[in-house]
Image (cartoon, rainbow, N blue to C red; front, top):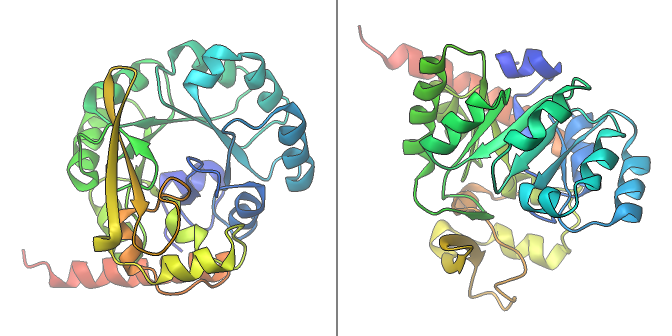
Length: 289
């Protein structure tokens, strides 16, 4: 077991979170991650009231949390009321300023996770009272600012938290897909990691088997970056290429080249934790003072 403040905050066996930033992170996968000792978060996307209720009924009252784009909350504030009515384990916010929603979520003692892609976003989230930041670099599968690499952004966000004198926790997100990247994230200041692509290649995934097989055949070289202008800023989206599938259907992270099998979620989490623990012990032995 890897013992971190994040584990203790949520009572987890593994400091690992299902990234709820893509439709592939559905209720099935979120439930599997939570049942195996991680934190499963469901991608809300554009799910309507009926679909959200079905997800909730299928996963149980407190098994999972939800990830939602702040821009949708600004358009449809009633969606947050619905999600909070489910007493989720956490609410993850992304794509905007979390401040208008943090107090409302924390009133019923639901932890807030906020995705940050720059140091300015991190400082504003900390000042808003967000309890957990997810430093989201551009090695990710989903959309992002595209301005910062994961391993460069992470320690700066860790420093910003330290300078704030708060007890804000930190997750690392963006290309985390094996024990080496998990260990690196923990060493660089993270309390846990958030992963999407690694969990999508699993027995519990909702992706069709041909897409899983295609995912397993990829290297990082097979991931291309498509950029577009959205609300006056550049957004990047990583998608696989050259395997006969529409590029706009299923983005994957740049870490896909380290994923070679699709076992159960339980096997994935146990293996990551075991190998990460061994790696960190090995690294300590290699350091000469």
